[in-house]
Image (cartoon, rainbow, N blue to C red):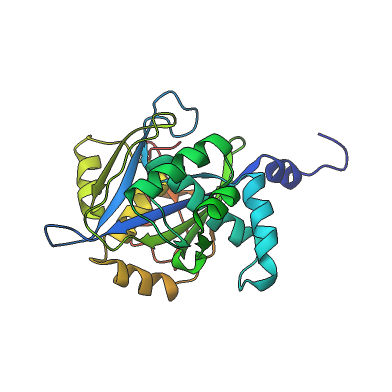
Length: 265
């Protein structure tokens, strides 16, 4: 380490900015709304084999597009870039179009996904299909930034988005992901308890929070009245056992679990 370089500088340099989105649809059979879950390929270094929400890292094209929009926006450039990344990653990974205004159907979405896969840049896709970004559709939900890690650190902003319809076609991208499915938050937690899927610590805590509600509208109202402060898990002693914990007061009904049982990325 350089004489003038602090631990904080190193930690910041190793941090990757990312965005993820909890995508809702109406339950075609009635009951609690469904959310989209994505199972990552086991070969990936980060969260390999885990079931997560769609998303990924913020790239330079996302930042450039955010810079072109920030003058007329109500939020800062980091938030804008994260929302853009959430829109782009959702289209790349799932074929779903969120956060845009314009003509969209299954055929158009498929064509847009092919173009995005080829270019890696959302801007030209928006121009080609006459879309405009509607980033207010993405509701801030949480921000996780683990400060206890020394490598592969992700500063991840979580958003909510609603498709509305119950009939939605999705197709796995077959690169980072191997399976996608719709389930209510309670169903996903039950599947994890049975060992049907593996969920890492942040995903489990967010599923528990989402499971408090039946509809997107209820979750959105809760998110709007709950502060979005940085969540950085920490280790604490509880009854002689080491637990991985998160701060209270940020909307989460379960604040931690025993460290030896916690699934980490």
